[in-house]
Image (tube, rainbow, N blue to C red; front, side):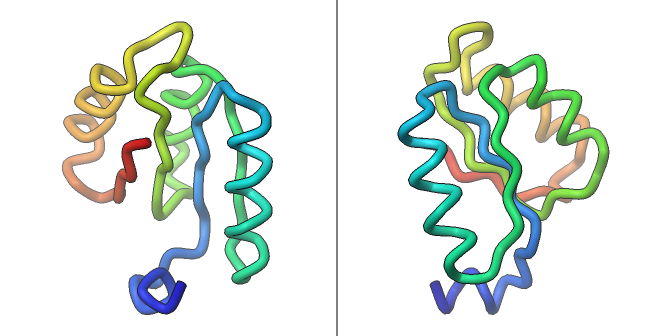
Length: 88
């Protein structure tokens, strides 16, 4: 938790199709003072990251509509490294 604070991460996008996992992750992050948004598809996730309001993305590699690897590669290329990704 201390490392997240030092990294100045404040807005986290959680892209996870499993409602239990996204809810638990959201609760954990909000308990340490971060703002979170949960999305359950790759298509919605692509739109959300392009808003530029997130510091970090927690990305499920097994999304139903898009491989997490493909999504991450597309997002990283478009954002040129301005966003941190955590792959789960």
